[in-house]
Length: 398
Image (tube, rainbow, N blue to C red; front, side, top):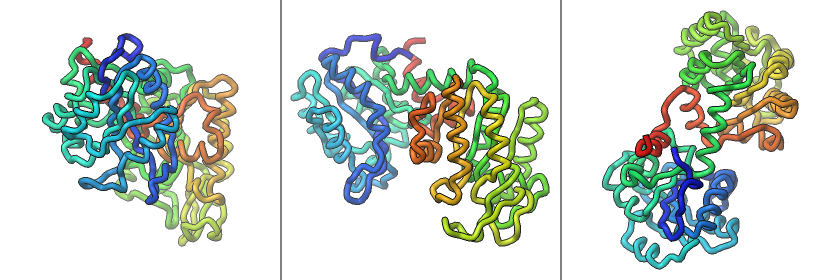
């Protein structure tokens, strides 16, 4: 995979795929702009190279043309961040785009409208990719967050640039940091996997059991593990059909000599509300009518001791309902432990929307080694999948 530092792009029309899938409210205010900020180094590099930059991205999951999911607000914000006017086209496929592009000067930036206004984008339709490809002389993928998808603008389009496709800085960084964490980690390597359901993390957990020394399980999925071991979990979240999967994971960990850590205790509440009556119990002894919403102090102590022995740490998924103050303690203290161990010399990578939101909420995001911009892509990589967006860039150079 060659990157943009390996080629001169002066005066070239560069079709740049980024991930500007940011939250926007009904008044077109951008609520979180990390993905825009993450793309700036690549955009600035292309501007300094005097390329003509045509940016493509998706936003949300529209069913056809939906102006509430327009990228126009992103173009406005990007103009401010770059301190130069960013052109905007209200259609990603249009004859007028050719006129706009032909009138661009070196260093100009154009953002095309939401790719997903067309169903052909997600379906990987070749003709749609052909129309997009016609806008550029060179293709650059800097959208790690969707590089696990075989969408037109990530995968199909690359075939139209057999000798002129490159990775941007963000995509490069993501792959390099994940490789550092997984392929050749400084051991012990600890993975912390949280979130609500085992079903969304089965494959990544099984894959990690071939790589890690310690695997910490937290969040809602922990209650299915507790139930699988004969525990009483009250009204806690449970995937009944995944109880055998939980037992299988426990057995695989034993067989592979991986230290699997499951919460010892739980903070339980009657209702899914911040001010709900709550108490702490063993995770296997939760009263009827109560549900587990966070890990308890014994679990925090156990997990922190493991983290403090680790030299490489991967975190994906919160320990509890961190959005509610009364059930955020587990996630907050585990995040702090990761940061403290990073300061002590460990390598740490955090990914997944909820994990990233949590670490930012606690203002700890600058105290880890790396924050991934792509939760789904990160999970796919950890599962051992070959990312289509990456292979599409490599093919012409192999």
